[in-house]
Amino acid sequence: MKSAGITGMKIRTIGRHGREGFKNLFRNGWMTFAAISAVAVTLLILGASLVLSVNIQAMSLNIESQLQFNAYVSDHVPAKELPVIERQLHVIKGIRSVTFVSKAAALKRMKQILQSNSDLINGLGNPLPNEFVLQVTNPRDISKIATAVERIHGIDKVQYGASVVPKLLSVMTMVRDTAIIFIAGLVIMGMFLISNTVKITIFTRRREIEIMKLVGATDGFIRGPFFVEGTLMGIVGALIPSVLLYAGYQWVRKTVALFPPFTLLPTAYVMDRVVFVLLACGLFIGVWGSVVSMRKFLRV
Image 1 (cartoon, one colour):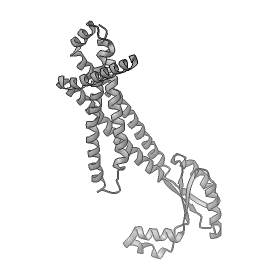
Image 2: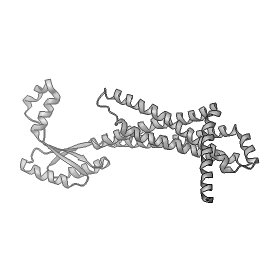
Image 3: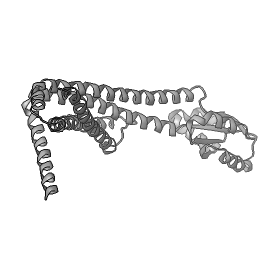
Image 4: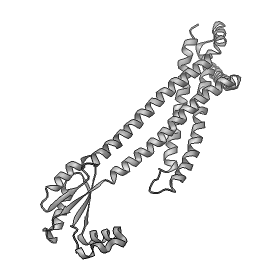
């Protein structure tokens, strides 16, 4: 019976904290508006950065995965030796796929590219060599793999954009690293900004806290409503940018789709993750801001 009474009292206390915390949102209208706005604006910037970062990363990985290079076969190599060269290429570690393109197929592709000007090469016979189009598992190993391919007997020349590929990969890495640093900075900035906003909210009610403390209220009893209030402000502040970003991303994705080959990742794939992160950040920031801010004012 005693434990049931204690349990009932705890439930009533929790209910009281919830009611008071919810009422405080409306009692301190302007301060609540300021706190929620701070959370919403910060998380809106964070969410937009996450959406941009996810798409840039996917784009860069897609570009890297499509990097390929060509190994041109010497004209002196007879057709019966081509399968031998292909087997040797497959043996090289790091090569993901090997596609053979014959002289005839290369010439046909060249004529398709030239279209109306294809007559320019009709009198030249077929000056194009047999070639192997190679894709690698890790684009950063392309230089080392190209060197190994070039050593194979019968390979006349290897072309992989030695002056462009390393720079492209370096730019992709720099973009990804910059995005991560920027997002981390936004999270830290948001935590301090929102914490200070919550501190101001609590500071305006320091007299109320001091009176409750002087009449014997425990720290937990005083902290409860503020804890609920901070949590609600964090959640509401996260819901607003989540809705805006979800609708905004759908519109941007449809607009970008009109200008191929540019494309963005599916809305559900990106936004489900971003919304989850924003809600988690809003909840954490609201709780963290309330806990940290209350410490000073409970020392009466």
